[in-house]
Amino acid sequence: MTRGPDHCGRCAAEGRRRSKEIRRETGRYACVECSKLDDNQAAQVRENRVGVLEPPRRRPCRCGRCGKQGRRRSDVIEKRTGIYACQSCVGMSEFEAFLWKEARIGSGCQIIAYWPTLQFENADAFHPLLVQLGEGPFGSFTIVGCNTESFMACYNARAIRFVDVDWLSYHYDIIGNEIENTPLDIPLILFNDSLNLIEGVANRQARTNQKAVIVTNNEHNENEWNRLHNVITVRPQIFRKHPRYWNHERHTGAPADGE
Image 1 (cartoon, helix red, strand yellow):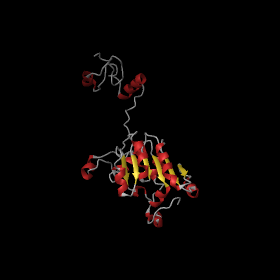
Image 2 (image 1 turned 180 degrees about the vertical axis):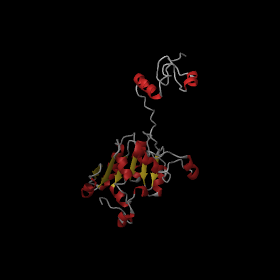
Image 3 (image 1 turned 60 degrees about the horizontal axis):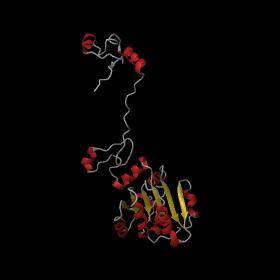
Image 4 (image 1 turned 90 degrees about the horizontal axis):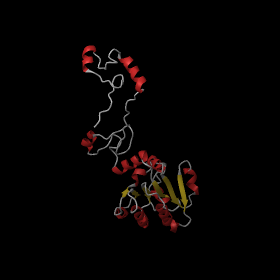
């Protein structure tokens, strides 16, 4: 192993090294060339030789659980709550923290929603989490419904794509085609828990390691979906509107297509 050339750490003179003997004599930890220079003069000489050396910049802190910048996971929080999280995500479930991380530092998600399901569950299509996931670099937000012209104008401010279904009996085929055409390198969020879509989601999950999230409020369907590879089910409470904006009549009855 060959030793590199010596450089003075004070004035950057090549072939010189700082000496402890000079420090004992002059009080300056310097080489022979810069022993008679004060700190400002030595810094000027060093700058002329090697330029201005910027101090190494530390990477910005970011929580590894929810991806929020300026936060770090804390051992103190883990001891207190049992969750290795930052102060912002300690109250979140693992799924919610995963979605926020995807929204902040991921590539987005493919969101496919059936309009009657959104209406019946009082889900907010303008929910900040859904908006960020759909507007990611490779994300998208697709709403499938019947007679969508009446409410399409309300969503023009967002990057939401509408697929109008003319015949109600074919809406599962339309949603299945949307699932089949989604990219495999980003997660999928599906607002329709019908068991008719299991085969299409299973085929997609067999070709990817990304998660598929099924929003469901049905325990029987939830058990069936959880059998698939890398599929997780969640309750719609995460995405619901404030109760003052709920459609209470619709929420207590069966949803009608196109409303």
